[in-house]
Structure formats: C-alpha cells, structure tokens
Length: 288
Image (cartoon, rainbow, N blue to C red):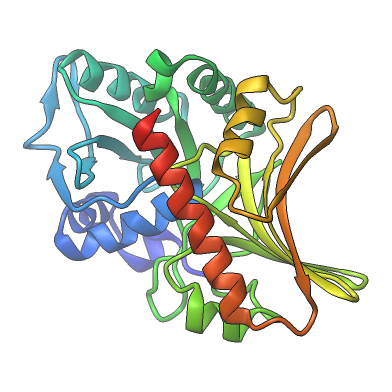
C-alpha cells in the first residue's frame, strides 16, 4: 500500500481532489465503512469557512445532511490539532443550522488515546439524539500501487482488512448481489464462515451478517454495543424483523434477529432476505 505522500505528494492536492465529483466516490467508500449514508455533493474549504477556521471538505447527502471530512497533514500521523478540529467543526456546523451526521478524520497513523477519545464522542452521540453530530471516526488513508483509494478502520491500533482483500468464500455472492453493501470483513473460523456488513441507517452498535455453518445458513442482525443492550435497542430489532425471523437476547451485551435457511438455499434468497430487512429498517425509522 502507498501513503498519501507517495500517491499525491501533498495533502492539499488530495483534499482538493476529495471535493470533486470523482472524489465523492472516495468519500462514499469512507461512509460505507463507518455506516453513514452516501453524499451527493461537496463544498470545499473556500466554500465552508466558519468562525475561527475552515473545513477541508463537507459532504451533503440527498436529504441535505452534512458530514465533515478533515485530513491530517502530509506527516500522516494524527495530531491534537486535527483530532480536536474534527468534532469542533461538527459542532460549529450544527450551530449554523445544518443537520450534521458526524465527522471523519483521515490519517495514516493514530495513537490509541485518540481512538479511545473518539469512542467517547460516539458514546455520547448514541445515547442522546441531540448529540448525534458527535458521531466521529478516525479512518486510515492508504492507496494501492495502482492508485486506488482503500480506506480501512483502525481497531485497537490494528487495521481491519480492506474490502479488496477480505472476501474469499463469499466472493461470487458479493460481486453478484452485494456490490453496494457496506462490507466490513469475512471471518472464517473452523466450520463457520461469516460475511459482516453494516446497514447505513443504523449506528455502529449494529452489524448485519450472513453466517454459513455446517448444515445451515443464517441471515441476521446483531446489536452489540459493548454495554448492556437497552430496551429501545431490543424493541428496534423486534420492530424491523421480517416475517419468520427470530429474536433472541440470551446475552446481556448482545441481541439478535435471525433467519435460518437450509445450507443449499439459493444465494439470491440470502440477498432478498437482507434487502427486506433493510427496507423494514428504513420504514421503521421513517415512521418513528
């Protein structure tokens, strides 16, 4: 993988590129990674000046919701200045009347302290709807040798495998049915193989999956917030569960809805079941 310095030679050039229509495709890769909706337009640093500073790029969804993108300088390592500016910009845009879905700091290296701090911000955003603008993330910037932008998550100072390298068992399924899904990774453990993906309308406490076992295939959605699952979260799962999906909350820190299918079931059935789940989620959120 290539660094920003190797690919662009300048953080400014990359930021300018991100503000173009083609650059929005790059930013939507980031959004898919962290569970945010796609953006359709952007405004640059010159167009989005705020009191006391200016934002690298602001993306806007089809509904006009704003997402902040800040990029670390050419050093690549997240510093206090850029890590602090990202959530601050989210606050400032909110005070200007925008509905802010969150912000992203793009960099090449980051300390665990910064990752932990951003988890605290996200914890606040998940507990209080009026703090939703604190849905902030730190994402790794990297490029293939061919110049393709491949953002990945930092996880406990390690990087999760990127979409381009993490799909093996489900490769054909992905290319036929799930090219627009927010794929996170593929786990292959003993006789269980799982394709994990996020549903953009839900926060990062939720993770959807296709789980192939010895005799069955399971399609499901976990809520695993690293704390006790709330009644509101359980009720959301029950409300969006399609017909024949089962709910369980046998663990205090995890609740699940799931559909069990035969091992020889058609992959198109897996995709259709997942799309039904997504539609149910959108209907529920629209009417709640």
